[in-house]
Length: 495
Image (cartoon, rainbow, N blue to C red; front, side):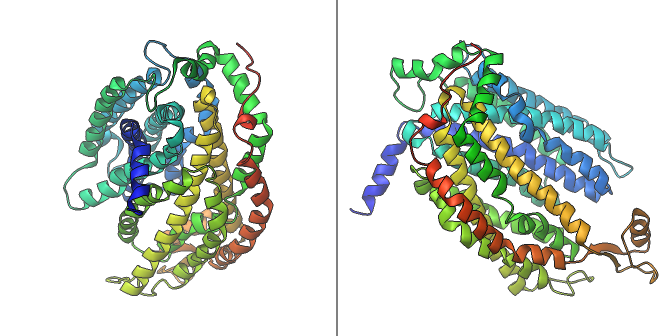
């Protein structure tokens, strides 16, 4: 009986929110689908001979998620009352994504071919789709704050993590596996998801926006929405600026902008190093597929802690463990079998098993931290500016990862020696210039960067992580104290 009591309480706690949780999972899963599709397209472009410069152009399509704060106040403040604040945006956005995917599927043969791919047009189409998805993310994040009851609002981060992971998995790893067996082509796969998006708009339309997720009195509902109903677009931007100036938000921003420094080398370069050393892409895709259950189930399991009153404690308590596990990045790169890139080469099961174990453990700890921060955003965000508030915090978080990723790439590239490996011409040994790279590839070789800067950066992870934790532990503790008053904008400008 004792073991069953917590389960009964948890089930009772979810009562009334089951439908809302299901809808959030659907919406977040659909957000992950086009992200996986763009990754699949990038994979195919590379197979068709696209250069790294062309792949770089295509990667610009994902930028809207780092810029969505620019139009988040518009999504928060402009809506039709009779339809609902969030449904006003979600229904047309779902329809627009659906029709855009159908258009892409019908023109895919012209855009991707062995004779040459129109990368710029593909980038523009996916840029448009990402703008739609970023706008949907603003609306869904804001709706989650009022859709779920107050006791379950922390589950929004779990729905976000599980949904987007599942969506990315089925549209990237799922497609690659199905396509490898000739079960489905990219055009038909994209058409299917276009139809799913059109159907999802119907389910969004059925969901009642007022009074969902919890029994809310008229006075409470008025307090949640009266600020939104009277807020102009200019006022929304002024209020967003006021949010960014809050001392608590500034402190949290400092944490978010620096938290990725310690792990940047391990997260940014490990996969590139493995591929550079000859690990087949098919094996990496298989590992990704095998890790997906961990990424999906772990957020659900840890929700009992991340949905609590102090979700950031999950970060501080597991931080140093993650820094130690990150050292495994050097190990998996150092011990790649020497014959792996040879014709008929293979990965020994012991190496394969260790690589999978390390990737799973590290991805699990990374997920714990991601869900903990997302849960904290949900708890502190002001419901009257939910979409903008969540978008602001997510944007700062994304920028924290982006600048670390870019800085690490440039820094490692600047100090690494580039050599030509496997070429048929002995005289071609360097890859320092574009001309040398061309000569290396023409001779049948590949350009490889030296590994020592990567290993040095990875070995510094525990040191940098320890320093960061000492500086951030007390501020993070204070952020979780004092209730929500310090996270609210006292004045509502621009009304």
